[in-house]
Image (cartoon, rainbow, N blue to C red; front, top):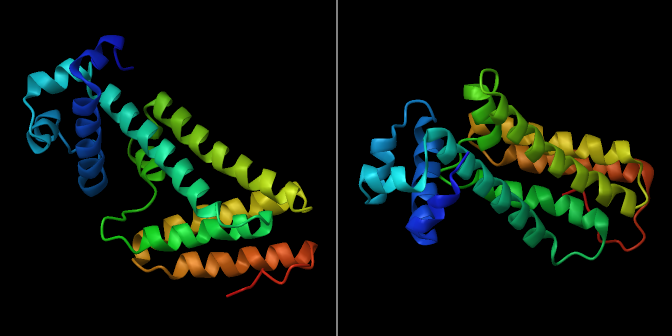
Length: 201
């Protein structure tokens, strides 16, 4: 876990190291990426990195925390334009489509971290479970707000998770679009739209 004294190096330096580590972990994996390469790529000495993070685990934790915060913020931002909870749900897939189109997209960082470390590193598994649970809880809450059963939200969250995995190896945005259509169909099974704003395509 990161040391409390790590903040003494300055938040900007810490954020820069986390950002660089995130990019390298995403491109090459966590295990193959050395702390020396992270420090060098970020423009700092190894001593600077060691002053900010007690070990590699601390840096990985910081990267996952940052990704979790960014994910929540991006999902929330995508929902801002939609007052209807059904449209808020479907906006998730719009965000996913944009994300999948990015050149740096390599799949869900949390899924990748679990595949690489989670079975042997319990705290990574805990962080992955937290991330996935927070997302599922959000979609389930929106489903209930829309007058749908909780299971509808659970199922739609799973569609979003599956789309991320599929897009990682197909390298297309199609999984986001297809998952959105399936999500709209699930919503339609339980509730006929009254505003006319909900669409399958």
